[in-house]
Image 1 (cartoon, rainbow over the protein chains, first blue to last red):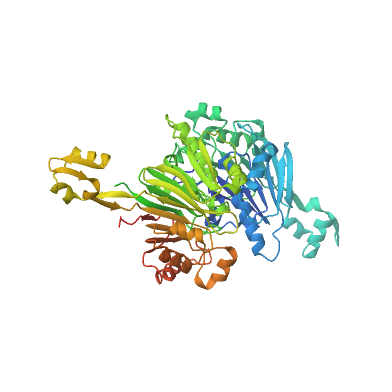
Image 2 (cartoon, one colour):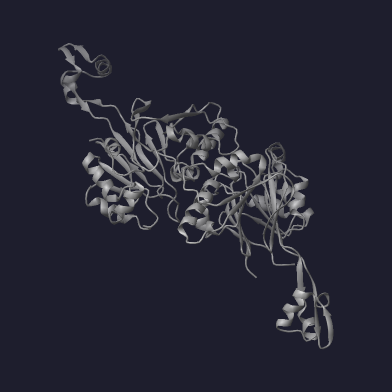
Length: 309
Length: 309
């Protein structure tokens, strides 16, 4: 199986700090490479992280606050450069964003003078639901979140599949190309009689990942996080700042962990930390009281999607 | 005397590299703090370099290619944040740029959603000449350069002053507050008769600095560089790439050094290096064959303006 992992490019909210770049994330998911919320500096952080923008298959912008989108012009212009440098076109790059922010998307797309061969495919969102089928193992959907401006969170789902039972296959003498025929046709006539696919396989639930920021606690966040293997979630504040979090429509680490626990999300990645907390380990401590698999994001950290259940 | 120095924030042309941020510079000049060509990531580089955006007194954009301006939204939004965080207003921030690029300036200024308390003072340029008087020791002027899109280079001049001759003052018994009176009135009646300021002083040429990028060799570059103490100059290419340089309207290190030598510029800072040359020392080697005081810029390097002649 190919890698499924989150690559953290930046983790600061609002403004960068000495130790944290603006918010930015990449997700490797089989042959897909998604960029989420490219904050300022994403272009360079990609280089440092070994993420090749030319290979990106989609960009997902949650909302148009600067820390979530000011790196978009750099991503688009880099794509244009790479498209001219290669002999074959890279193909169109879908960019998903809240439709109400169309004007901001247009400005970012044309923020400076360049030869636009980026082949960007604008994908404004206006409602909850399926958003884009990226490939056989990556279906992208979106839900509205509860922030101060229109905001969508994202979710990547691998469709449910089947898991073959090797012992059951062997018992029935099914080997080699016959296995492929059985999968393709759903049944196979063997010397010992007809074998139905269900007899020699069980269900294999697809893996999933959700990206939730910026938001107060809301139904959309719960739907995105529902049963995911990896939940990347903002936790701008700590519990003792819950009033601030409510006022600015953000989450505390406690709220993020509660969301993960109640939704049955397996691994929680906390990020988008307020600069007032220089040592982000406090976010992890607060969350681990509620959820057991918590990763505190740091610039250039790679977080694997947990292995299949 | 307070510091006059260039702080290099980034040195890459076109796209950043593993070792070089996008183009970006700050100039400390007495009580002035100028930002030149804020490329993507300027906001964070300022933090690493100890440059406080809230203290900036002007921003000069040569042209609207991305590597020279994509950090502008971050600078403006950071300014807005700081303006709200302080009890007194920081005062307006003039931003100079080629008037033909007004549409790009507007997009960068409103690239994402923020509470705009930045107090930006747009200062579009449409002709050569004096541009802005920043303070008693910093007059900003601009000249058109020869690039593929409208581009202005900049120059900071301290007006010429006088240098008092301590020995001549002492000889005439002029001390204490009388020195101030002599300077203010241009003459002073002493017990030994009238003393004219010229008798006890000589001229003191003002210091100057020029910022030249991106351009092919041209009259504007020569006028900007004329006799400056510090010349910050693009040298995207090397001599053997002179054809590339001519095609894209850029300078080679040899051309930058020739410009500095012919204009009588004292210290030359080379920057804006093409990513094809990973070791930038080759630019310095080429330039030093022509000019003796050459600095090869590197991210976060500080270059003092040479002491007064």
